[in-house]
Image (cartoon, rainbow, N blue to C red; front, side, top):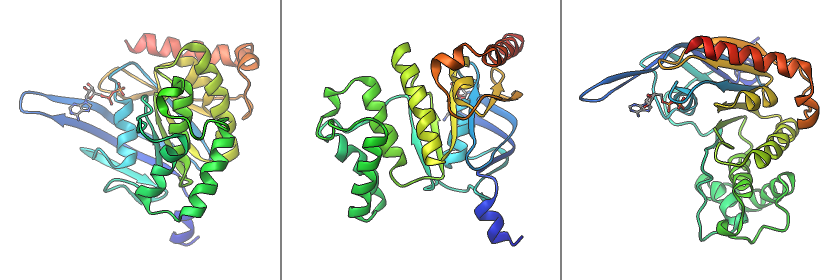
Length: 262
Ligand code: ADP
């Protein structure tokens, strides 16, 4: 296999023995320590751990927004040395522009990237349909619920068809029912787009429901203490998964691991 082919077909994301230390004048914080992690194309990797254990830092490493103190990071076979454009990023807060309607918030991504307008508009319309926002194209952010706002944020992150989608506690600020609904929708959207997803959460249930694999982190300095493949079908329905004994076993295993790590 040539190196070009390897780049096109290889691992989507790789962290190789990464340590990150943040230094300020007064203190030094080791945010993550000796973390190795791979995501193959099409995988949905969830990273679960307590607050402050370095989950966001892992995503920022992949995005090229934080540099490792030691170790290496690569995206689709290429070393990450600066801010990456081949990713989509969804944060806990939707961060929409309040004066722009839904469609124009989504199209912001196209404007920033200089995408061809016709293609960007067609893609925006496809995503609006995929995420159930049809009929709300002209609504302003303040007219939308928190869940709807996160759908817009997801469309904006997917507009340029990124091969890798990074999600940082995307549903953490939503009520439990909306969160369940969006988890089910995200599962469907992931299957339909084929995107590789890395999602961080402190919810054990969310990590198991969404992931094809769960990486469990220890409290700071964050290390990966357990890797658990999720042996549930790719298509998941909340009620069915919650009644599945495989789900219970995995969630209990993670809970015990997190309890032991404390
Ligand atoms: P999590 O996402 O798991 O809550 P973070 O990755 O945000 O954790 O942070 C891990 C640790 O690193 C925390 O103690 C946080 O305060 C610290 N940290 C994160 N970013 C910085 C930074 N830019 N400068 C200094 N400390 C930071």
